[in-house]
Image: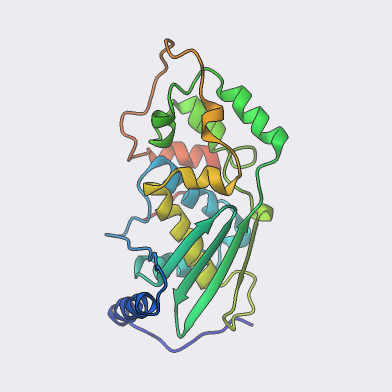
Length: 233
């Protein structure tokens, strides 16, 4: 049975989260809160790709909207990525600890990705900024064979009283990862335990079409890749 705490308004939730962050820092924790400006959680290729990937899994569908609301309102007071593990503190009716573990990418799948991207990624900067041609984007972001983890490759837990497999605090932390990828795209490669340099080509003289804007991905492209109706706002 799902647990529903007392209703807290948006302004109260934001104010409460800010107090929690200040308290955590006062207690000596190097708190890394997820702060989102506006309604859009992610804007770059990697951040939007992560969030869109989450939306493509029916197992997560019923709890993601609540998590989206929580992360937008600043309730993810701390989010730290350490290798393939993520630890988050999410403010709700209390402060809850969320742990997320991402399975390293299978070696055979990584080899296939490298093979299919060979000669199509000119530099590490282009890769991390998401300046990718449409065909490379489709390979990397493919729902089943790409770089993003599938639902069975994401393990998570929360110490809240909600007995659902995924509570809103976990969903908020997952969205928080997507937002963090905007500024730190390398984190995705860290979570999958692979090295982005492996996707580089030695032939830098060949030119390939690239996206015009690394911070804006046409929604129809993501919809085609993941096979869903996209709603990130």
